[in-house]
Length: 339
Ligand SMILES: NC(=O)c1ccc[n+]([C@@H]2O[C@H](COP(=O)([O-])OP(=O)(O)OC[C@H]3O[C@@H](n4cnc5c(N)ncnc54)[C@H](OP(=O)(O)O)[C@@H]3O)[C@@H](O)[C@H]2O)c1
Image 1 (cartoon, rainbow, N blue to C red):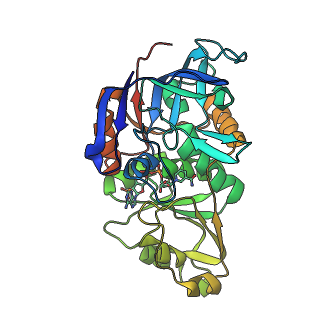
Image 2: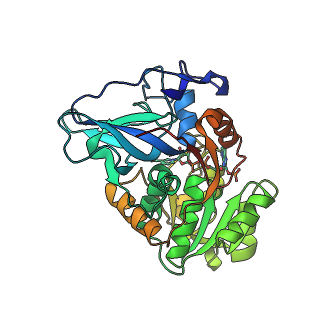
């Protein structure tokens, strides 16, 4: 099969579009002809190598995909060739307690075909496109859990979202607006801010030209006069971490699910105790999050934000655009792989 492969970890130039032998099916497994695969910043981490996570080499990135079943192992009876499916990227081996994830510890979906456990498949109705479905698991599932399950965002909350232009960010914005929150969306360019306003943001901040802390102080006032936001969402980490603590109002929450710019940032404990804030981590998604997002997508209440669709052979350029922050929402790789 054709795939985008890396034989060693490193910068962009380790990626190759080439032929690679497709694995044979083991018990309980299914081969899926990938029709759409959405990109996540996690793909960059997988390519670079992540401390504490051993990625078998050669590796294939791509955690999120939808497509059609093209082959089933002899013991798989619930699925048949041609079924339209969304793949839950994660599989838990209950005997060893080990987690496998496609596009990470398991070959991913920057490829014509991906082999997964049958239990990872979710039926896809004809009314949801492969492209929309492929946007849902990693970024949107995580945003769903972070904003609604862990974050308990409610009507009237003021919510500042940093990195709002990306996959998790646009989804966090849509979900917060669905709940009736007031959203302040922050991103790295005027054009991205304009797109965020079109998506429903009530205020935007271009943090490449303006301090989001200053914006918060000027528009909400000082902490003890009721200033700050009910919820601050920070999955960027790095230099933004300590700054974002200053934007949480008394008794407010800071939500995090990632650290694009660095996982070991400097912090400032004074802001945490002074504002008596809750810092809540959120990790990944549960199957319930995906089921709910699929329902919302099917009913048209939730429309994935797709920046562009590119064929598999141009996937390396797409990955580069994501790493260089030249996109808004989700980039989707498409393929005509035959079921
Ligand atoms: N824990 C989990 O299960 C989980 C699941 C999904 C994602 N995550 C994490 O959440 C984060 C966001 O993921 P994503 O897929 O939404 O990423 P993404 O689509 O690439 O969006 C991230 C956005 O952050 C902004 N940004 C700020 N500083 C950046 C930097 N130094 N490098 C790159 N982008 C920067 C960029 O927007 P501007 O150009 O507008 O600044 C970018 O578009 C990642 O760290 C990811 O690993 C965690």
